Length: 373
View 1: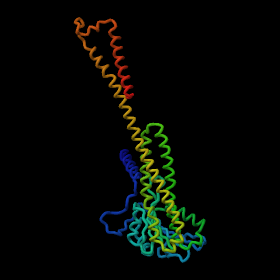
View 2: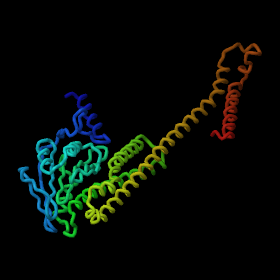
View 3: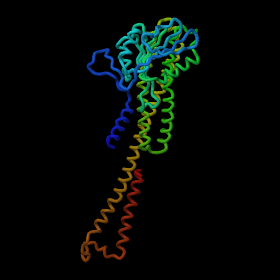
View 4: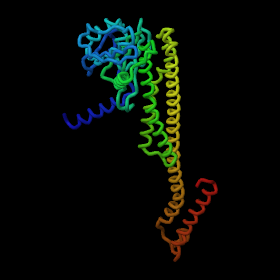
């Protein structure tokens, strides 16, 4: 490949990294429920984490899909499916657990909006968490199906979210005091995702504070404006990812039984508080970024006006001087009295310079009196 082709390819990759949202894996014209494997994703690998009644968690790999576990009598079986590059094993898993085809279609579309729905006996969660670098990397996509005693998750690739939660459960198993452990684990997943917004918001706060100080000290340069634009773009991306979580309380009431809703109410109330807090911070930071953008544009405009004002004053001052110099630059016979007899004076040149200097002084005094300087 030529050097020009490499540059073009790198530019295209950079443009892809700057996408606000991941590309939805749907093909126009196909019938609902059509399953399209994800390009670049590997074959499905199924792992099961089983929790007992306060006992130690066990993790096992399922090599044969005929040996998939059902809902646990005590505790919960968490079936983790990693790899969405092949449709057949996904169909088999969905058929075994009674997962609807439309829900599986959404699972195979990472760019889909975060949502929480009721699908038969399952609560279906299509979740997106913010990436480490908001505008440079796509966030983690997780599909979660929850029912009493069972959780089934689908991941395009192993997500840090599930990895960290499984490590936590292996070290500190769930207590037997919680009856609805599947619903509790669902809360823990949602809590990790919502809490992952706060480091991003803290980072944006620091950048905005630094930009505010720089803009207040000097005229913003191109680098400052680019950073401010990136912050606004990141905040828009975070707002798009966080907005669906504001519907959590209403949706969770639909998919949980009255018993589990009462038992887990303190947890979901806490989750709702975190969502509200993150939303308020995000709105505040976006307003600050928007205000800084307006202030920057105003400063740049005022600076440009000052420059134009100075140049206009300089041009205005030199206009009469150019006129005088033009008059005395005309060559005529000085023997006639009407043809500039002062050109023959011994001090004519200094006299004209003094007149020109006087004109400049009078004009500057006039500008100062009118408060134009």
